[in-house]
Length: 300
Image (cartoon, rainbow, N blue to C red; front, side):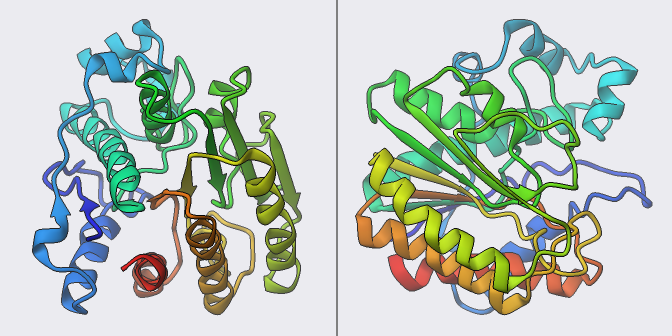
């Protein structure tokens, strides 16, 4: 059984002209149910991530500001969301969803969070629509519990997973792999264990061969006990914040290959949604939905 975690009981009210497409989460969930890809009993509303879990990779001072909703104006601008209880609780739920999905992956082979991928959150601050680094929290908790010994993070969002790279830079039990647009946010990149930086307008013919040649070797070398997959769909052509030019078919091939590698290697995998800001909202929902379909092809 594949279980999917959902944080749709926590919604962040945003101004009408806000650029972040918050509605995508509920609509992807609705589309999966509508197409019969999942049944209602497969959806789980996760517990909020707890303080001791947050502190495995975030500072106590930053955690206190999150709890108190006491971000400075500068922090609010950097994160891109208003400092509200709704933001706090949504962030805690999303991180809880990735942690629960990781536990599900260890038991069932795969876990899926219909949120998460907030890879721009650092040890002591957030940015780029990211408050808590859900992947870092989940990986750190499982390592602390000795449930796993080695983690591979595969980040294929168009933006570098800078927060994740910084958090694990001195941790030899976590291998961070980010394949992203060189000429895009964040302009100051961190150092992952492996960064593949590709130029703006990169399409299928350049992107996919780099992934095909890199990921099998990484998996063979790292030999991870679990893979966390940040499956942002902002690599698609015509994404408002992307600058890559992958086709919809190319995106399908990307996701298929990642899940196939995990399946063939018998390595549990956790999939989180990551970014997506397409000019066509219907295309955006279809892209995130397709990622889940590719997962189900191998693990259902």
